[in-house]
Length: 573
Image (cartoon, rainbow, N blue to C red; front, side, top):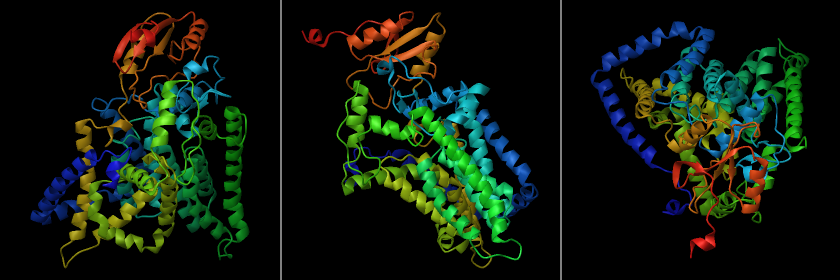
């Protein structure tokens, strides 16, 4: 009953519907395998043997997985079109990608910033996104190639290949290939990670580089794996710096312990430091220098992150559960007032029930992103993985990132993206233990393992048929109305200024005021109605543009020549 009183309870209906489908699907699949046991076992052995020749060629498998992600997702474009941005974070990332695509790290502040102020974007001392640069980098690559989403598509394919490469260091080749297929099915078809602009593919790929390289270094250290270890750390620092830091601590500890161990017959401590530590240190020093340079360009201070600047400027709610709420801040427009002084401060009330509410919300989101109901069939195998000494490092890394994500107030599933490779590894190891379970000649564990994997395939295929871009559609279904208005204006001659007028019951999560990196040269500029005085300054600055009015809350396709709002006092006469 306590969870029913949460200010922002998770929507459980999609998961409940998925659970109903799981019960039906599991019953059908298990019944078929029990009735036709000899046939199902034969088909399973045939498939398992047929993939062995391919599994023994890791380079070809990597290429096939990479191309498979891209080809299947492109083939599904009639059902799942190129995503339309709708979340504040997406527009901020797209601004970053646009900035990078123009050869800049940041943009000069705009004189009319008060009217153009946008969520999760810093206006001073430079006009730029508040987020770390890795996601913006892949979006910039996509924009140069034609569409920012191309960068999302390529990074998702690279994530799939990287996790497969990681699994090769921990599991037999066939199981590693199965893991790559699971990653493709779970994250690269009907997940907001590939169907939006704010997913976790970049950080997930970096986590895979870290976990895969540390396993190889401990067995046979070499320069390549040392550089990949450092590259994983560098990408984590520039994609999910907080979660990535805690996730990487166990791996760094294991590496340091290995470096200081006594000499072995094949390698001295000096050789270990020369082969591994010097390359890692060199890459990390270059990464730190870049991050300081990036921060200095965006905030004016080498050690002040753009995210920290944005929090300092706009946020009064706590970042961590143990932090107090700061005094309310003043804002230039009603939308920021409603978002930061209203919704954001009301989500967490510093009580144990509040902790339970935000933790429950995170748990539901994490389960939706990283799991499927078919994993219930492999719980017996998970028990043995908990006791597996070889899995201590992955369990430690998962534990550290769990602490990291549950200590903060806000957390979406891609915040925990660095742990994607660990979760897949533990799932596969559980399936391996489960597959070995039998009673006399009856391989009941193999039946459960097969069913678990087949249910993910069924879930993915059925979601694609239903045109569901994710379990929670709000993560990837942007409102196309803004895009429709934008296309109308781009088809008209000249340049345009769009004044966005919101109603009193405006949805704070559906904002339309976001602009490109080079505002003054943009064909369409979006602005807020602030006050007659500020609006007059805006019109004088953009005097050569035609001014339009949109009212998203009343008619989201409405577009007309701008007229000032009626005086509130006159409206009540």
